[in-house]
Amino acid sequence: MQSVGHAQVPSLFPTPRRARILVVDDDELVLRSIGRLLRGRDAGWDVLFLGSGEAALRELARAPVDVIVSDVHMGALGGARLLAHVQENYPDVARIILSGESDPRIAFRTVSFAHQFLAKPFDAERLKSTLGRACALRSLLTNESIRALVGRSNELPAAPATYLELTRALRDPSISTGRIATIIERDVGIAARVLQMASSSFFGLPRTVSSIAGAVGFLGLDTLRTLVLACEIVRTFQPGSRLDGFSMDRFQEHSLRTARLARLMLGQDPDSEDAFVAGLLHSIGLLVLASRAPHRLAEVFAQGEATSQPLIPTERALLGITHAEVGAYLLGLWGIRQQVVEAVAYHARPERIDSSWGLASTLHVASILARDPEALVDPDGSEAMGALPGTHIERMGMSDRLEGWRAIARLLHHSPRASERPR
Image 1 (cartoon, rainbow, N blue to C red):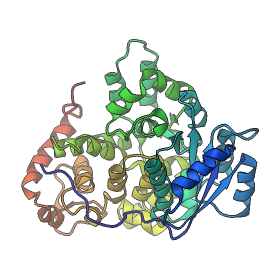
Image 2: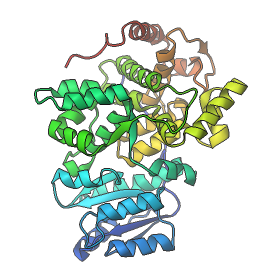
Image 3: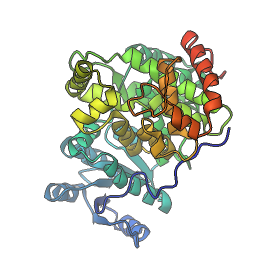
Image 4: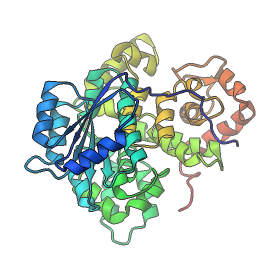
């Protein structure tokens, strides 16, 4: 199969016309260095350089801020305490931590508060791209209250059974990385947090990882034990109220089935692992809403049932956003690979991004077939995702592959583990 492709557009998440960024470090040389790196940047950024956490708090109280970048070690008010305060009081601000130390314990102390981690000395392009993306994502999710809801916590819930299995496995000194990766692949929340940490430049990886197994292998089991057992990067799913219409088990099952089907649909294509990750995370926005705004999501489910309207149109009508946008926003803040974020954002409307058959189109079809291998074909299709988009599939030249995809989906329904790759 040809490599997946995207439409040639200037920017999927255009940078806001203006963006305010705070850079906080008590080392004047570091502030000057960052200033030089950002000099001449024509992005409408208003960057303010501050020498202490206390000064940052005063500025946050004075005027709105889009992104804060803070060193981890700074006098009385260090980066961890500063970002914890920002998370609690200004949750819609993107939070980035800086550190000149390679000790993973630094990351462990801030994993609950920071969206991303940057290592000193800085790579100029990495710094610019991280700041640019953090600013641009605000144009994807323009509702400030929803941004605050997403930014209020870095935690994501895990299925209790999977979390218990993982914690037991990590306590086994003889466990293999392959076995750990297999367990993590079955849980959306755990997988997303592991990818967030592995994608961080703090751990020294020159590029973001493209698979769960790669993330586990890179971080190593000792780091994972600390993250999962000591840092509590995930918690078991306990909705604040009874949430009719949402089942954690069904959610995890559908996500994993979509991931496996998406990977198999791309076959030997180099993007097949990205397809698996995107498939696993494509509905992560639902997990965010179910755990942080269960009452709002319950309203969506109730309205959809009363009007017989599909989920995404109902979300848009009641919330002004969809779970696809919520999920993409969170993954983007965490530094997950850009093409995965794009696919999650547009998996319900793949024609907006794919000029040739791409990850978004793959996810669209995989999610539908993962629910029903015999799904009907609708020439028009829609973001309701109730039927396969016949015209889009035909225009992309993929009509002859549809029956093969159905066959794979049937196999996954009857034997969910049959297509797992050996480790």
